[in-house]
Image (cartoon, rainbow, N blue to C red):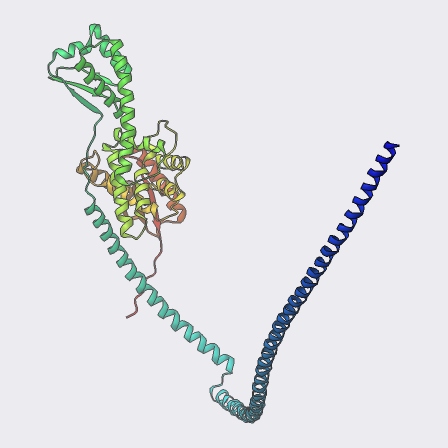
Length: 509
């Protein structure tokens, strides 16, 4: 029973507590809800006020934009009204102009009608005058025109021929004078030493005892030296001198330098000779390349192929009829540059062509073709331009000249090589050879005059037009070339040109 009482009391206490809690929650919850409702109402009023303010601001902004748009429309409307007024004014002006044009057109039509009437009257009078002239002269209009044109043509032709002859004569005199002036100025500006080379070199020694050491036991040293260098060594009674004989200047130079080293060193035997000769050959090859580079630098020539530079250096040890080939090439290059400058051409190209014009003479191989053509072939092979190649190949007239460089190189080559003293030929022999060439041509019947030019490299023969035909001139040229080749001694080649012409000269006084 006690337990039941206790349980009942506990349950009753819980029910009382729950009721009290419900009453408290209800009271407090009603207060919170009421407060939340009040806050929501206040927030709603604030939002409504803010929305109204934004609406009012947007409305004001819209009204402002509408007002601005209305102002722009009013301004555009004013401009359109102004343009319309101007267009109306221009239309009225155009209308007035059209009226003026119509009046002027009417006036022009009236004047045109009057002119046509006058033209008809003039044509009528012209026909009457023409008929009267034909009746008086007995010639028709076409016949009179033909006679007038023929007389005017003859007079014009006569005047033109006289004028052309006068101009040609004046140009010929002026051209000869200017050409002589340019050549003389060019020669005066370029001064080059004339060095004559021979086919022998003299090696000087301190005493004659060295000769025995050079000869060696039973001549083995001198034979080894000759075999290694390809030079004939002459040891005779000439005091303190040994003669080296060879047509190749490079070999003579190698032999001379080898002898100098052997004599200075004192050890002279066949093995040592071969060693020294090989060493000197390498030194000479290096000297050749250095000489070629130094020459191109001195002349201001750039971009030359290494093989061409080597050939230029080899010119130092070559000679053409006694004239050192490198000196001749340098002199020709400077002459070409000076002459090209006088003529208003490119002096650098002219100097380059002048240096390379005899490059075909120093090639290691010896082809069966003229050195000028072979030189042009080498220049083309090593990248030289076409005008340089043509100038090299045409300086002996073995190729057709295509540029102004070619005659300049030809003239300067003749100036350098043909002047007396430049090559190994005394003046008397030089003059005698020219006279022999001229006299040989004069011995033929029908020959009027002969001229040996270009230092005897060309023979020009003038024959009478009434004494020889064109076919006879060809036979004469062939026969002269054959006789000169068989009977005379001359350097290089001789070009024979036979000239036959008929001239008609008249003078009007």
